Amino acid sequence: MKLETERLILRPPSEEDAEAIAAVANDWRVARMTLVPHPYTPADALVWVERARTSWKTHRFGGFAVFTKCDGRFIGATGLRPTDLPEEASTGFWFSPAVWGRGYATEALLEVLRFGFGERGLVRIEAYHLAINPASGRVMEKAGMGHPRAVELPDRDDGHSVPGFVRHLSAGEWHALAT
Ligand SMILES: CC(C)(COP(=O)(O)OP(=O)(O)OC[C@H]1O[C@@H](n2cnc3c(N)ncnc32)[C@H](O)[C@@H]1OP(=O)(O)O)[C@@H](O)C(=O)NCCC(=O)NCCS
Image 1 (cartoon, rainbow, N blue to C red):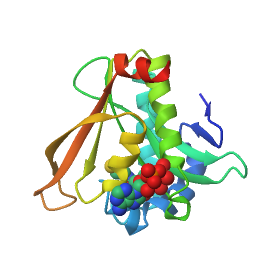
Image 2 (tube, rainbow, N blue to C red; image 1 turned 90 degrees about the vertical axis):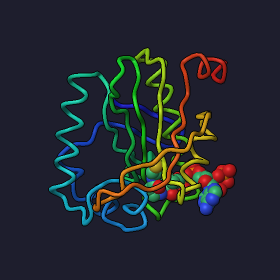
Image 3 (cartoon, rainbow, N blue to C red; image 1 turned 45 degrees about the vertical axis):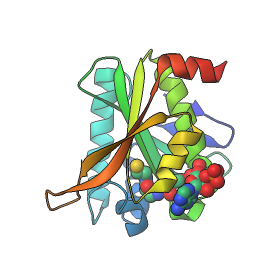
């Protein structure tokens, strides 16, 4: 399984990516906007690799490690996760601060949506972001994910909740955008 966009390669993560994944995910600028463990070690990356492998086997979708095509460098993570409802999935993403602002997150999300709707026949894909993270909401909006709805999201460690938003795109909306 390998997806290609103009500038990116997306493929399931594997063991040899663990150091590179941890180096990016352990950056607090990334971690504070996500629910990845912190500190994030190569052992945490291996947990994600294994979880992604299981998801790919079970659901035919899962996590993607993202690399720049020009130099093969690991730059971020995205993917699809099952929800409680069949034919629906949830997506998310994080990218190295070294490459922020170049449109990579949007390019990767558009490809994940194309894969989910176009190749896996999903009917709805949703995504969550923290209220303090408008850049993430903007990426979702640019990729066509609308209907922002305020929600409370679990906080990292202390069991409290923090304000956030959920957005979604339906297969019908995606087809309308894609044609
Ligand atoms: C959010 C994140 C994925 C964006 O990645 P990226 O590759 O820089 O995204 P893109 O370049 O495709 O698009 C970013 C958009 O957000 C906008 N943006 C950046 N900072 C912003 C801010 N503070 N407020 C509003 N919009 C902002 C950019 O201007 C751009 O929109 P534009 O093209 O209309 O100008 C990246 O910053 C990241 O990994 N952050 C840490 C982890 C994270 O937040 N993950 C998402 C969890 S839900």
